[in-house]
Image (spheres, helix red, strand yellow):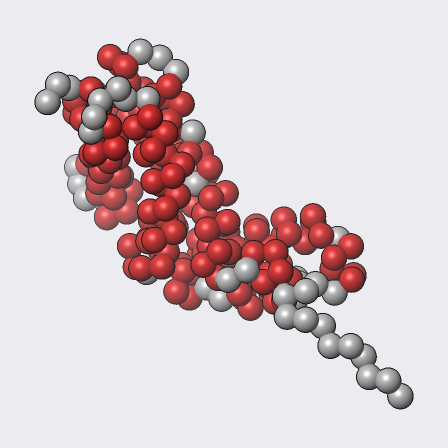
Amino acid sequence: MTSATPRRRGRPPRTEAADAPAARDRILAAAREEFSERGYDKTSVRGIAKAAGVDSALVHHYFGTKEQMFEAAITLSFAPAIEAPRAVEDGPLDSVGERLTRFFFGVWENPATRTPLLAIVRSAVNNDTAAAVFRRIVATQVLRRIAGRLDVADAELRAELAAAQLVGIAMIRYVIKVEPLASADPEQIIRRVAPVVQAHLTAPH
């Protein structure tokens, strides 16, 4: 009797491959949920597979390693923030500080977009691998695009300083929840922070 040919690691069974698009979407949704609830360290490929109702090999097949799975999941979660460069591109530079600040807090004030962002930030703070993935996405998808709109020699530094200003406030307001910043009116914060962001991006040396 001829034995069955063993399946190669990472290759999906035919029944799962036939449902490829739906299976891939289920895996990505499960990964996003698992990383959000458990953080990077406590999430496993096996746990993602179980939550998605698929074999672990299928997760490896579509997404590779746990790090690659995390990058795919947070890219999906981070999608609203990736639109930030448009706040710089759409309009004059002399009002870019307010547009960027208002966009940033609009994303964080919305519970639907704030929850996955909180999970991303917490994972990045607690794990070096997660931090490296987060840093790569922010650098390539957000900061370089913002810097590309600035006609100055130190554009990347300016973009990073503006981002540091906004992310630092987000950490204190939404993650650490220090009062009175945690419960301050968003409009009050925007009025105070926007001029600082504007100065980082466009003020003379």
